[in-house]
Image (cartoon, helix red, strand yellow):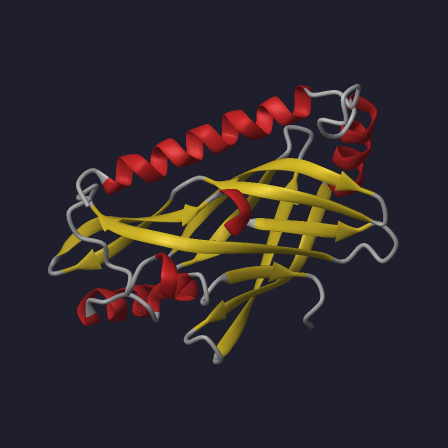
Length: 204
């Protein structure tokens, strides 16, 4: 599909604008959380976390890696060292896959949060931004950019009693050096929707 990368960029921008708009809504007409509830959500999720990134090699076979993330007052979830190994298994080009695995490269993943429920759990949608990975491939250094689905595909929660947190992210495409003519991930939404990524404090 032509300019597919621009579509993902547009989806991310629209989702970010939508999430920002949600933060400004009040509950006079039952149109979402009030400003007070939004403030409670922000206070409930702010902080630094350590846990596991669960990445699926197939729909049933998965592995985990230690990760840490933080959420600030700007309602941005940030994983400073997001590992390429979390999606390398579903890269279609074997040489590129091996290069990602051997280099153990990382990128910074940022996600906008939009809150929609606050009671025993703070529930939120995520709008992940693209994350770039340097990779040495075919005798040159390239940049592989990973994109995610937004809207209901990417969401999460924090339990206000236990403090447990989980967030699900669904990959959409990976482009090499900004060339959107070739997606290096196997399959598209139908396949990848069953092979998401998850960050969690529950799996030890």
